[in-house]
Image (tube, rainbow, N blue to C red):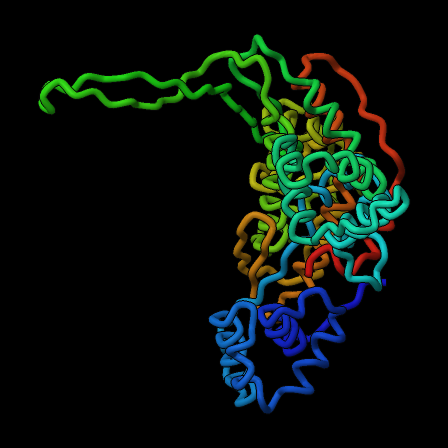
Length: 409
């Protein structure tokens, strides 16, 4: 069951987050602020992020006086790399440790990995060694994007326990990594694929070269200069990070499109689409390039993106296939539930006025659910490999994600 909170409660959550309570349940964060509301200023020296904590407390004081503050709260994703790969692969275990499944648990993937590694070592009799959460976090953050060197550097001969623990708690992400790594083509000068909203991802293959240059003005002294050259590489782990980050970017674009929309324009499009579906508007054959492009993308990716609303007008709307029109109508009605508002994004962190916190959390989990139900991973892999194929999912978790409360914290 998706829980909602008031603007004042989101302000309390923001204060607790900057203090260091972001691993607690929302209700516990709110209660902590209420319990300490008279003495919050005195807690500044012990806050994890003192400037942000003080700023949020100042906003709270202003709101207590009935004044608008303009303060932006921040809601961050839980271990976004593993979270996203778990959604793409339909992995219920990975979704659970990244807050996408259990609606009443504030999950912490890094703690889950730490506990699993330590449990595996205890089973093998290595009771004198304890892995720290900080090391697990660094290994998961880097290893989750394809790095082999960082986990080895952190754990040395114990790296096998990391690999097994990661496989145990997030099998979708762990199994996807070698698939992405093996997709590297050592003859390519560029890797490219299309994202679900039509964005074309183009990643040139670059190698670092160096040369020595003699400088006459320095008496013939020479210096070493490094430069990048577009050339084939025998191997690179970059596909893992780039494919994941390109889907991260898709989420950011969709968060903005679904939150910061043009309401009057959307209402006009909704009426036209309903007339088309009801038969009040005669349908015509699609000839408009944008209508053809985005309807084909929707079919291929099983993904409905608001980007198309910028290309629909009262002439080409009649060319929209009925199945596509029905899904667009559903999306518009969902968007209109929340009034439009400005949203600031920094990678997997989203900032908004406190009164819009429910909409941000709602859309983030809904987009993750749509990703879990989409063909995005299969399409990306097909584009990279140049062969059409299907990447099998571990499960159907879209509706479970829709019930989550802690995908963003």
